[in-house]
Image (cartoon, rainbow, N blue to C red; front, top):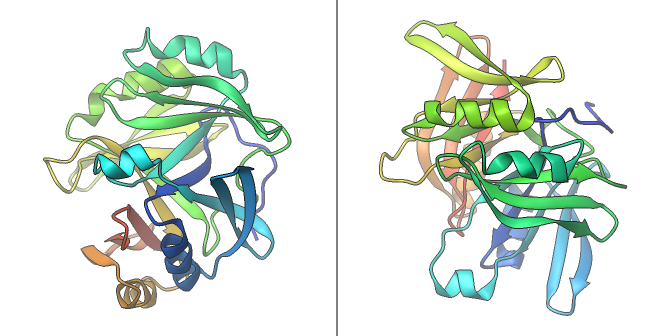
Length: 257
């Protein structure tokens, strides 16, 4: 079991989903990943449901703002990047070509977070750990295992992540070219790729670890998900597939090699 209590700056540390139907999303991911939930009532109308696997927090599902639902804004998973000093990192966002959407603020003693857009408009969150460093379990079935920025012009975003998080961009040779990743804390933590739909806006996508990709795809489809990319293999990496959940959020499942 891969547990962690510390994430390096620039490393994805947490994920959450703002869903237009929170209870339906909770049922879907419980059926797919076996998630159980710890509900945290933040306000009278807002419950932040922490998903757990074997008692360790792996993600959260919250209600999407009514204004966003009415505006038809597509629900999506949000990736939170660990930072050591959120104010200092936040100050680097605009000079690097991004913008701050929600300035750094406290989250009930758990830590401090800010919502920003990178230099090509992809949303992401900054997370400075307090009592909660991030996910308590990673790289295990039911938890996240990888993150990729999907965009047609992702190469323009690479300097943003280098300059804001002080991470190291690395180009890995591949059979059909190269694959660009970022390295934080001495390990590869995320990558960049072309988006499946050239008309979609730039966004971060989450890969969830599963024991069997084919079986997970079948379970997801039975629960109402749409299969966007058929399962396929990458030698030495694993078998993966892309899905859209019943509420519209895109995600990947991956069975590691």
